[in-house]
Length: 281
Ligand code: NAD
Ligand code: FES
Image (cartoon, rainbow, N blue to C red; front, side, top):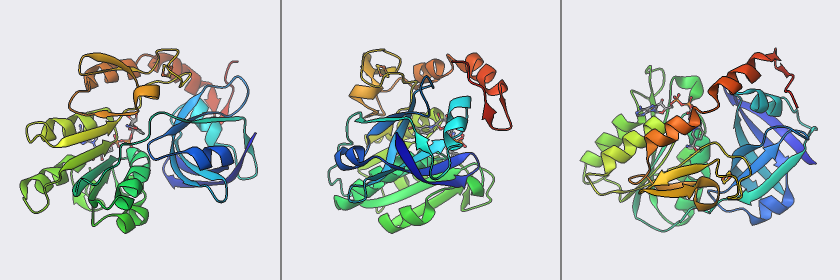
């Protein structure tokens, strides 16, 4: 059992949970994730380790409550317990000093971006962080990221906060100016966003790393559920990733595979009434 120490709402349907998990907190590196089960027999949910405090034995998880299982998970209040937290899983982010780096976070992806920005800042990179959301309540971790970044830019689709438009509009301006053009780009967010970033940086030959979120089941390379196509090769995001060269990822295949269980997910959601989920075991 893993005790939930706090459960805070960061944005609509987005929770930050601090969980006691001392072994994970000690071993984890930026970019790694855990697989969580709220209770015995529940769905296994992959979650990036947003932050960790090895001294106090805690990890922070950012959870978007979009389906029946994630809604059940965020319903566990402070003082409650999560049945399983397995990890750390996946490869750690390759961190080096590129000089100027742009870190792009779209919506909930900003939470996954946060530990990468932290590690890149500690390695001495000069970071421009661009974060976007559909409107101001969806823009998260502004203070935390501004401390780590030389420049923090915000975009919203409706213009309610920062610049009106997508994160890619801000990236385009950054790339145009020789004084701000990045040597490497990290992008985490919805597939179409990461694809758009990769298409912008490819002709400019700017190294681009994306973090993929395919369906995961075991998280150990055994089930094949998380397979993605990278440069024409089959890769398993749980053991070969989750980060890959954005110029080589087949984003259309990722989109199609993410839609595989849409009907089942909709049915499971329909069985959830007022946050009380009756998930069939
Ligand atoms: P969203 O759809 O609200 O988009 C967030 C921001 O991304 C937008 O404000 C915009 O700036 C940018 N964006 C979106 N589409 C774009 C496009 N076509 N071109 C350029 N920029 C674009 O995102 P959300 O609802 O917060 O996030 C949900 C999505 O994020 C889901 O698809 C989920 O699977 C994905 N996600 C991915 C990761 C990951 O590790 N890659 C992690 C969490 C969530
Ligand atoms: Fe099963 Fe990656 S989640 S192989």
